[in-house]
Length: 511
Image (cartoon, rainbow, N blue to C red; front, top):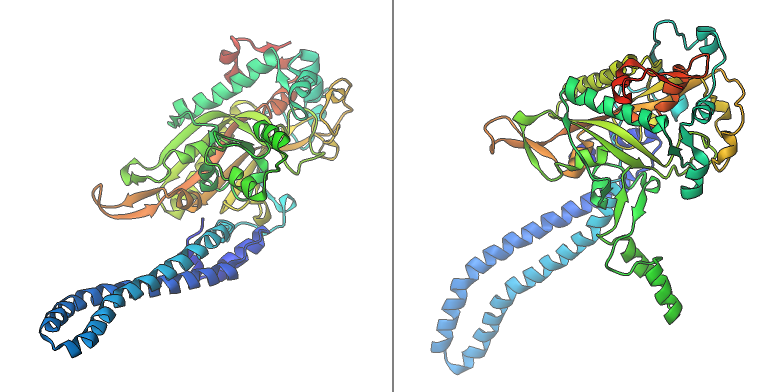
């Protein structure tokens, strides 16, 4: 959530930011509602002050008038009673007007909040302007000794590479047919050394962050309440990517219990009941990244500045619907619904220079990890149209995948087995995204109401919203694609990178 005070002071910055990101946000309407709410709030406070003043002043007046009535002639008492009644009804009238204002404010606030949640964080000025991923700018590349991604795998290694589809088939590392049979398209089963390599990468990445870089290991829920998704900026934008788990004990529109009840009674759930169903506080959502759980840990808390930065790392199962990805990367392990990810999060002071420094450092951790695995990669500076609502800046890291052909990624519409059961024709390879490093400033922390006390002794000083950053450490099985394809050998085996061998029982080759 953006700072409403900043929006009032410089609305054009947020209008321009929305346009650069290609995100619709009705900022003029938001400002109108905000102005009306402030006007009503001011009037409500004025009435409260007037009511308090009147109540304080009329007490003695009522006492004097009541005393005078007892001594007044009968003919004057009626007029005095009328005056007394008017004095008593004055505060009540003010209270009624105040209640009406409260009701109008209450009607405005949901719409105001809904609009406020749609306003994206403006991109930093040094982020290149572009409409989408085609506008991203390459920062630099890295290749392991003896390999040049620009020349291609065959020129660098002297033989034609297999794709990961062929490697997992030939080495028995995955079973796509049975995965699709159980769970539908974009599903898989890692088998034998495929699953062992998957676990080895996750364990190595996790230990790398904890033991070498001092991050605190944390477990996090992967089923969370809606406020956690809203607080971290994944709702309302991105809601279509999340799996929802309907809760109880209330009857659910669309659930088997409601369906059976409807069959018996002939009733159809009304739109109102369906809306109540969607708003059920027992509903939970499967997270698409460990970032949600790591950031939700301190929701609604005030942290001690001396404890910052907080450096957290987790490994969690992630779920994404891949809505809008029909026909994209349907074969193999690149774009799937369920995967595991080691995620790093940093919560730091509200200082732009500090946030920028952490952003570079977190990218550096990943570069160090990829280099230790001898995986060629490149860094891409994402343009404004590719940032999403919550990022001031984002850098993607893409690994070189010899078997990747961006123009031929959709091999089968349903992701079923025939893609694996044939030889893949040779490709020139391509880069594929494996990591994203994001700088969010106070956007998430403001939504989560996560603050710290700036300066002074604990318990004193101004509270300030924290800054947050996040970056993938390793996401598997996608990272298995470059691991298998880059480290394949002429005889069809795969060399296991040295850092992973302790996690693979000391073995050096998958054969």
